[in-house]
Every structure is written in C-alpha cells, then in structure tokens.
Length: 310
Image 1 (spheres, one colour):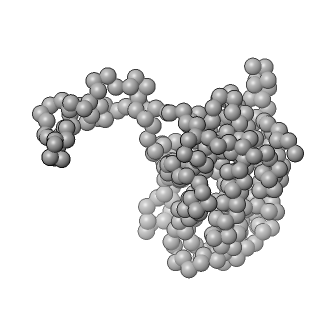
Image 2 (cartoon, rainbow, N blue to C red):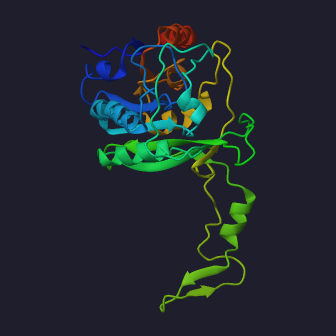
Image 3 (spheres, rainbow, N blue to C red):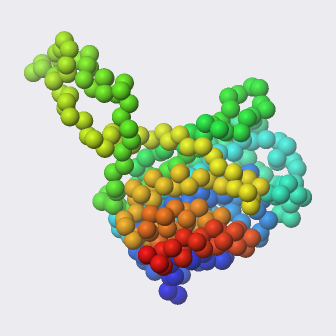
C-alpha cells in the first residue's frame, strides 16, 4: 500500500513497515519499549519476551525494515534504557502501566545474569545492529538532572539513558549542530601547555598563546557534544514520563532535511510527530496501543491544522 504521511498507523510495527516502499523515509527517531520493565496491556507488544536475546532479535528485526525504508542518506536515532535483574520481577506477575494485575504474565529468563546485575541491553542492541550492517556514528548520553530518586543504598542512582545514532551508508544527511562554547574551553584553546609538533616528533612547549588557536572562534559556538542534559517532562494523560520533546529536537534538526519525513515505529503519545511538525517536517508513526493513538492524535491535531494553513 502507499505510505500516508502525517498519520499514525494502528498495528504491529514490523508488519506495517513491510508495506512501506523502499527508501521513502529521511529519518527515524524513536524510543522502543524497554525489556522487562512495563506491560502496555496489548497483545503482540515488544518488551515482554522471555529472554533479552529474543527481545534484541525482535527489536533488530524491526530496524531491518527501518533500514530498508530509509533513504540511502537517512539517519536513525534510538533511545534505549537498561534493565536490572531483579528476582522480584522474575518471580511475580508483570504489572501494567496502571499498576494493575497484568493480563500478560511471563517468566523472565535472565540467561545466567546474576541477581542485581545490569543486563546491558543497550550494548547488546547496538552490537547486534552493527552485526546487521548499521554504522554507529555516536553513542549519546541523555543526562536527566531531575531523575527519580532511587531507594537502593548499595549502588549509585542512574541518571542517564542512551541515544544511539546510526546511519545506513557512509554518506548521509547531517545538519551540524552547535552549542555555546564555555569560557574554559576558549581558555584551553588559547593557552594550551603544548604547541606545534617538531621534526623529531616531539612537541615544542610554547609560552603564552598557542599558535594553533584561531583568534576568531565560530560565532555559532562549538560542535555539539554527546552528553545532553535534558530534564524529563511529565505528561498528564499518562501514568509515566514520555520522552521529552527536547530529546527529539536535535536528532530531527540534525538528521532530517526541511520537508523531510520522520518515522517513529513506536510513536506512543506522539512526541516525535509533534517535534517534526514544529520543524516544518512530516512524520509517519506506528503504534499498537489504541489508547496511545487517541492521545497522540489529540496532541498532533493543532500542529497538523497549522501546517495545512502554512
């Protein structure tokens, strides 16, 4: 079937992606369901697999199709968190997002991982993506300064998640992003302890100004770094935090051209679509949960009307 833009498709993302034409998408920005953390209350959902190996394989099968529908110069950005092996999670029935008894009880097999250990899901995912031909350009750290306090006393509170930046070919669209250069960075550039390399391969020590320093730094700032400090934002219509618009902003700004199409195969409450429309770009979403589709369409409606007026 023809792919419709600015629309959320209702159903299994793998099946729906297979109906989309080759090389029809400019950019993919998404946050898949994490493994063994939450029951979304729908049949066929990702994240309740018995083993993390099965989860990673199913997730990468979805991105095999994403890779097919991406243009040759397309980009793909994936936000993914980790899971701890917890015997209470293993032995009890899963709870859904409303903390009600789950209709999808499962037995978790942690495949030899010791109790209390991180399962290292993001690393397993990124390696499998590389095994399937993706090029990993960056691992971005989403630092959450307002992370939820943790009750454990025998480890540190986790205040970050990963965002993986993949491409399918060596030449791809990328709009360079900048950030404000702090004074300490300017000072380091001006007054480095070591200077130019000599013929012998040694570095000649300089007194004062580093001769390699450009006295006229880029007025746009410095090339954006890979640690992004972004606060989580509550969403009143759901019982958990959706990923914030700011987290989507840079990937879409950097990885999708003007009037391009952004895909989110796990669009949830519609954040990716909202940010795409705000940047005068188009979106295609897929979602299995009908309640989320209703919420997302309600969020997207005013931006869709505005884009039609423009």
